[in-house]
Length: 301
Image (cartoon, rainbow, N blue to C red):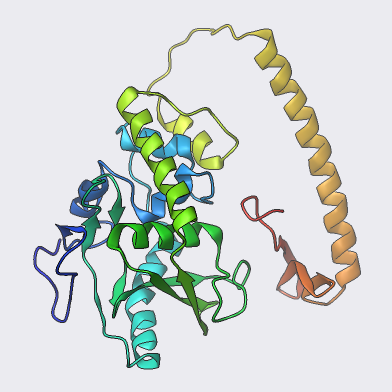
């Protein structure tokens, strides 16, 4: 935990409430966010996060499931953050790039911001990505939607009107993007956040959805095993059977499509259509190891 500002750090003289200087992922950092919504959480509130659902976030805030465990992706993102910020600072000597603390909005204390850096009057977020999927033309605001929500949330808390996003793609490709404050989008996120906090206070549990994080939360909630049979209604039984049948049929169709894709690719690396990447073939010991689709559940059109 950092209780005092790091050397060279800055914070606005007026505006948002200063909560403190916390190392991301520490117990103190989690405690500062426990009674509010942070930038990495607002996307879950509106159903745009690939990592968290509204259901799982609600149960996490209630203390019914544990904190999100740090993944390898999260670990390396944290490790690369200082280097990415240094590269941005070299590219922008006109901007004073300094560490940023944790903030809360002065009128909406549930609205929490943990920006990576201040960049003069702007904010700076440092990201890493395995590939360029979801990242548009450099210099635009074409970034993955859950990161856009994070930037807008931070700007809404701090009063900043621009948020730079510097990303390191595949460990070697550096890009910069710029997100401008949008009052309408920020209002949508703010109102959704307020409804979420109201649901927490009223114990209004979100509906179960198809997000993998929801299923993982449900798996974590109960403890122990009672050797009893539990009667369910026929509608749920029939829905479960129908979903199983549809899943197996879709699985067979997907396997057939992947086979045809691999056959069409041959010894190539990627399948493309109209200059858009469809899937990437990886090789191990000279033979196909996997075929990774370009689209994921959360960026499918």
